[in-house]
Structure formats: C-alpha cells, structure tokens
Length: 247
Image 1 (spheres, helix red, strand yellow):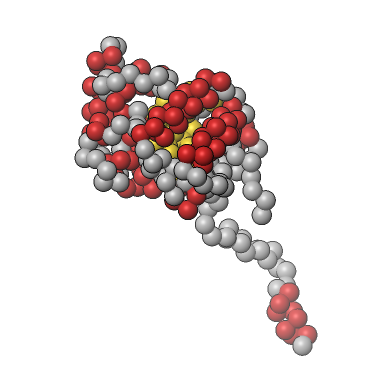
Image 2 (cartoon, rainbow, N blue to C red):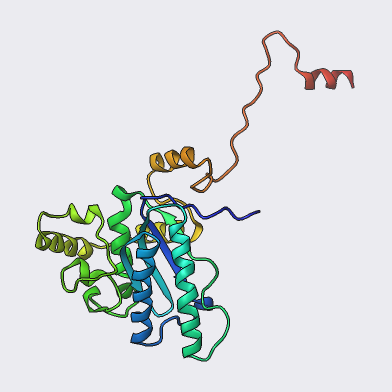
C-alpha cells in the first residue's frame, strides 16, 4: 500500500518525534544539544513554525509546534537535518544517516490535547528515570514555562497565555498542571497517534478534518460490517427451497 503524504494543517498544533537510527545517540555532549537548539530556533523562524514545547533526549526529540503553512514543518525538519547531521558526522568521525527514517507527526486538537501533549513532552525525562523533577532536566522547555529560564526557542501558545493574567499566574498554573499525573491511556494515545500519523482529537474534530482534507485521519473500526439479510417478500418462493424441490 502506498504511504499517505504526511498530514500538515496550517495554524494547528502538531506533535513531532524524530528518532536516532536504531535508537543510536544523536546527542553526546552539551555542545550537541546547544547547537541543535540554535538551529531549531533559526529554522523555526525561517520557515514560520512556532515551537511551543520540546524535549531533547539522548536518542530522540519531541516537539510541539504550529506551522503557518503546509510546507513549513517539512522544510524546517529537512533544513535541520542538512545542518545537524553533517556537524554530528564530522565531530564523531562517522558517516551515513543519523535519523530513523522520516520524522513522525500528528495533528492535535488544541482545546482537548494541547496541554496534555505539552506535559507529556516535558515529563519524558521523568518517565525515563533521568530526573525526578522535570525542572532538573536542562534540555526541555519546562524551565521556560514555569519561569525559571526564558527560552528564545519557544513561542507561547494562546492556551498557555490563557492560564493566567500575569506571568506568575501562568507559570504557577502550568506547574500545577504538570504535577497532575498523565494516565497510561493518555500516553498510549499520544504515542500511537504520532507514530501512525493519525489525528489526535475528538471524533467530531477527526470527522471535520476528513471532510476538509478528503482523506482518512483515524484508524478504521475493527471488524467487517454486518451483512443485512435479504428479506423474502410475503407470498414469494424461497429460491433455495425451490431448487431443493427441483433436485
């Protein structure tokens, strides 16, 4: 089956995952993380993609972004690869690909999943057992969101601004949100949608996008549709019985 083109909806949040090939390291020291973030900031500005949240882990990257058009996200990711991969290969005397195929992405329904996805991204180091507190991890946007360190990579989403009227209110409200546990079901839903490219949202949101894009954006329901039995008009003969008598 031919692979569907990646679905990108302008002005709608997207969750993006880029993994190292065979789960190999894509960052080996602090300079690698810093250089990647510098290029991410420059690429986002050049291709008009707003970065709302991120985490850089040793062998993969999560981003929460909003592209302003249909091509900007893909162009930004390609541009990042053209700069970062040669840098990494030269530094560590290696050759060949660094990424595990194409990056993965899913469109997100803002009101329903934006904050959950942002929390999911920034809590990755905690789930991985790297730190106990997300504030202790240097390579994520969490410190920006709770007011510890402004981050030039980040463009705050309107839903973040709606958390409070002052920076202190927003930061405290966001911290309280992150301290709420994300359920295993929510984690599985985000992972599954992103890896498979299905839209993460309510059924109403998915149906609207299917109409807008003229393509399927969610997995098909399991099982075959039940066949309806044909009704025999009253007074008519049953063909199977008629053939039986003729035999």
